[in-house]
Image: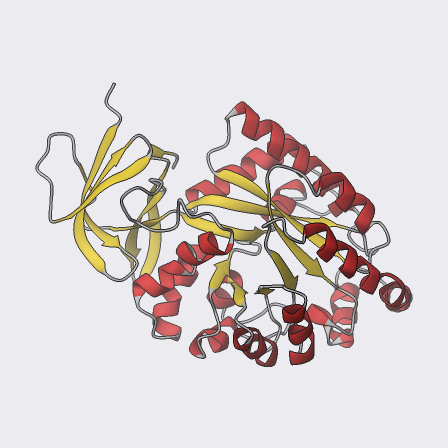
Length: 379
């Protein structure tokens, strides 16, 4: 049986350059890299398309969107997970962290069932070998939620866990630092103003009572375990300084320039959302990722809620921030792999996993043509 594949006539996006060249894949790894075309029989001609490393997505809520394709229309969990897997694969994502929420703040009760079902399905579907993409787990810990710690006790030692984030979605801080914007959003979604006011009052009390103790408990639980811990929606320099003092090394979706600048000053990796960049701004009124990128404040791009936005966002960085294509592609490949301590992927180099994406430009937009994971075609 021949375990070799030759990909030739490709524009290889390497860590420091774009090279017209050829890759030899063998036994799931990149065996050789060479400039120029191959004349070997059976070599696959990529017709001058780009070849980039497989995308590494540290945060996607896409599973939740498959579980609830419409309001009040819950989809069977395994079917939803398989649909999610297929969507991330065709988007060029070969490694994905399924971001699942622990803790109920009152308006998204179904997310807890999604988390329980998703963690179960991730394990069983991975064991069965039916997933196209390699899936890991990202636990999102809602600090003010009364039930968060109990759920975390269930799942903190899951073998697929690769990242943890601390969240606080209390109106008045973080993503919803503008409480009036939060209220308008909830009313628009069908809640009455009285319902929203009552919920804000309850959440404010819960935050005062539980958030600090829960924060200490989560940090203690993961201390020394080698699992990256991020803070979600940093909103000012003081919050970032405290995170740095507590050993948190990742700022996930900072909501303004002040927080992002502080995170970089403390040596943190900054994660930004691909949809923000592709849409041209934040859906919740927070800082534009383009503005962050222009100041050199973006290290990692995550899909957030649109997996196909990852590669398009990387391409856009070359325009909005003047980044080289290798540097821009690294925000969705090498940089997230490094942050997760996945040293076997994220770059095109001999000895690394043959996770690869063929990309063709159409009017300046990148279009995924083919995806390989471990040398095997998955899309």
